[in-house]
Length: 239
Ligand code: ADP
Ligand code: MG
Image (cartoon, rainbow, N blue to C red; front, side):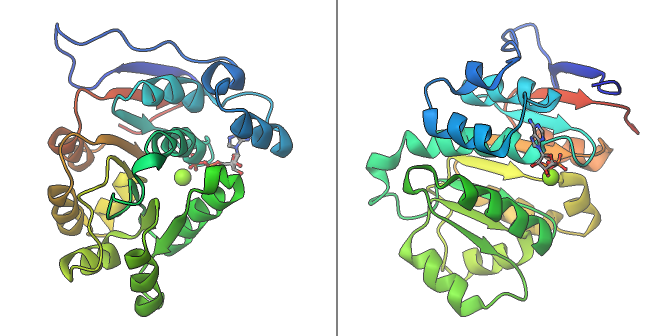
């Protein structure tokens, strides 16, 4: 925590903005209703939430949008993933007639997408299923699993947009979206695909964005798709 100065605020603050939920100092505060999650955290041996997790979990569990700005290695994956599992858990009864994933995570590269998918599968939470979709992967296999129905889709924006445009994947049932490493996705030229995909998702979704930096392009993306987001900065920032 030596270097973890943390700043928390509403990105587009107005006089009507609600107070920001208090951070959770221990895993127990966020997940006491979810013993399987606490058990898994215990198994991996983490001592306490990282600063971004401590702030993100209460915000996301209360259904609000969040922007997490922090360097690599600050624990952003679990910051958005554990609330995603709980989000799906609340809808398991409706899984059969949902017709598409409840959670969509967009990530800039195949490696990052696979890493996130691995994390989901490690938790094996209440039978929640996930699929990783990326350019270069077997399109046929991906289409097959997608059409069979999964709870979480983790994808790079290019291939994801192909599947959505071809009608293989319906993103309308998505109610929780993550734009992971938004700055890198924009640097890689994925903005048009991201915008097409976001356009197809209901505006009533919950949206999470992570980024290492906060340039104007990322800010515009947040402005387009997020609803009164809580913004968490961790560490020294290159603004
Ligand atoms: P980021 O997405 O911010 O780059 P990751 O989510 O990939 O960071 O996490 C970086 C590393 O920190 C991973 O190895 C992860 O398992 C570990 N980690 C995550 N949360 C904690 C925690 N609360 N305590 C200790 N290590 C953690
Ligand atoms: Mg990450």
